[in-house]
Image 1 (cartoon, one colour):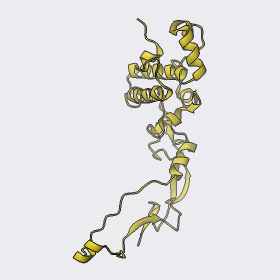
Image 2 (cartoon, helix red, strand yellow):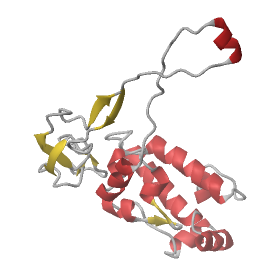
Image 3 (cartoon, one colour):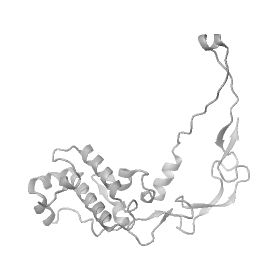
Image 4 (tube, helix red, strand yellow):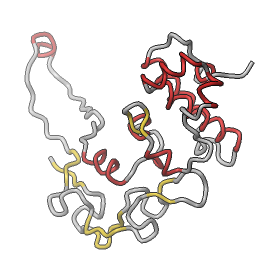
Length: 215
């Protein structure tokens, strides 16, 4: 018996939109070409999964698919053909109101465009906990007390404002942060590390790290 889109995504016909999305994300990550370099079978499976999700994530398309069946739906040309799509086509595709990048977030560096990468870089990230050991009198351990501690931590460099120095667009990827060697998907540029920029004049105070130690 030929597989239908529900079988491909390993969900039941009564699956909720969230269940379908969760299953697609799990399977797509498993078969993604970047995870299986050179594996044409995995690439084909990845496209098959994306085609199935494109239909089932669209409420109207799903109703139509359920009403007329898999063969009638695909033969009528109402569905999508992911088999001939390239990297840019996939990245720009809209899945039921959700973009390809939103589905995967930062899981695959090659998915992120320069604009989405810049947004993620601007978001504050949680640092490591600061651990400090001190000895306290028994009475303070029982009743509690307050102590002032002098601790060094990483802070944004006031000279370069966290940039690490003066930057210029990466000449290897032309500022996109992505490099495509002719395959189906692009990967982060190995020259700039996917940032799309290179430091041309390193900050002397932080030596290019973007942060300094402060009390």
